[in-house]
Image (cartoon, helix red, strand yellow):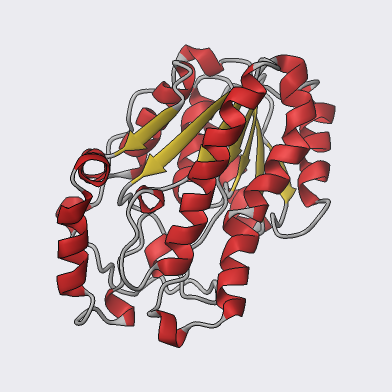
Length: 285
């Protein structure tokens, strides 16, 4: 697959921290940012994947370009993000951009779920983002930098069988709406990113967080946007200081309908609610 154009020069020499950097959007963010000389701190639970990514990035750069810093990090654990930010500052002297990207999806009809399922979903997708925000904010205020919160089209449209995931992404949209004007006064620019269906592992991970790499993607291929294309749009939005960006064409259409004609989506989800199985639940990015 051909790579998209390099990230905007806006990111050159900037210190960028990415959570969930071991796969999907996070991995591609690291790749594209490295090509324009960003100074990267890559965070995820899977250290082996981070090592592999850092090696691939280092192989494309000049010998004088520093290798990305990797940090084994679980956003559900108190203290991990503080340690990651400290490592970024120790390596690069500052932090300019933080991507709160780590997340996963729990999907099933409500009768098959328990409150613990919702709690696990929020611990990663909501409180994990909050831990990232609180850890990064003092340094972003110093640099008058950028905070990117990766939400989802599911934060605009909730579908049957995906209530935990949609609830978590609606919460992120509410968070971004509230803190964007609060942090603007401190010079921090907040961007909420709402992807639609993007090529990644998220729809191959079960409710316990286990990857099933060979499982069938329930989303038709023609509707899935390549990760490089989605990330290129994300980086352009950040470079322009956008408050929010809905990523993917189908995502823009769905959000527009949700805003101006929500009854259309409700009618469609109502017809599908009775026939959709657990394995057919569609999780947005």
